[in-house]
Amino acid sequence: MAQTINADTCEYCFLDLDLNNHRAKLATAAAFVDATDSRYGFSSKDLRHLGGSEVARIPELVATDHEWSVKNAECGGIETRPPAAGNRIIVKLFWDVAPLACENFATLCANGGAFPPGCKAKPAPIGESGKPMTYRGSIVHRVIPGFVLQGGDFVFGNGSGGESVFGNKKTFKDERAGLALRHDELGLLSMGNSGKNSNSSQFFFTLSEKTPQCDGKHVIFGEVQSGMEVLRAAEAYGTSGGEPTVPITITDCGIYRPLECPGAGYWYDQPDADSFTLMSPVFVVRPRVVVVAPSSSVVQKFAVA
Image (cartoon, rainbow, N blue to C red; front, side):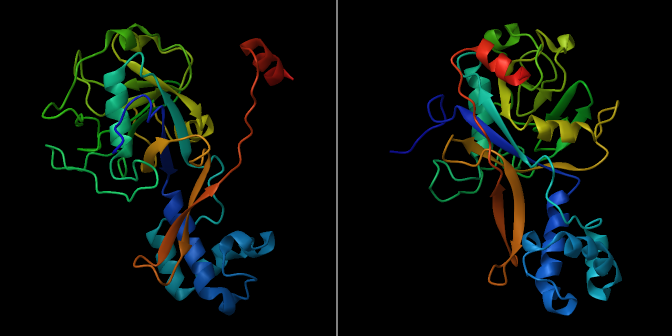
């Protein structure tokens, strides 16, 4: 029996943010090492297996190589190290508070991917806007340090568009319980809108413990469980006007299931001569340590220690 999007199947979602085209820059470096290992005497065809002194040579070698210097310029300059903060953000959805907002967000995360987990990925459906109904491939269009990081406009990519998953309705109503919550924590997930009852696909994360100007106007429907360091890294590219100084892209998204899906890590495009795209994407997992405690006071004592 096919699974549906609900509180039981989709308690958590993930978003993978690529900052300043880091993924493409790292992929170019990986492809360079794979193609020129014999020419430049690398100890491995895999960038990840090279020693520090070898990695340090790569930028200069790329810059002076006739063929690869062009590719280096095309990608905006290679990256030889994975993103320090990783790519993945895990959010917990408040289904008991804002079920409509949760269903909308979870569906847009799941569309275009493998849901239920283990099944073959299907193309995202096309909405009334003519765009695929998914966050995958969309951009973060607004980042104001100390305030919010906003995305979800997969229609225009500038904050003026968006579309909900509810039939022919591009927007849906506010949910009172979500409106009643306060934007008084870092990493809260809230609906972006253009006024009362105008929720579509846009969302934002709070980047401050106090954003009272959003209270009573935006529906809170989740919070960051893991990956706050990714948000902080993205925040560094924000401006007072909101336009990021570098591209910030949601390269992947989906339903997160603990112990089944990677909770933290980064994307690495491994060179693959047998692939149509000449590369195979690999999500490199970074281990997380989970502390289980009997009460919040014990957690606080552990954090202080």
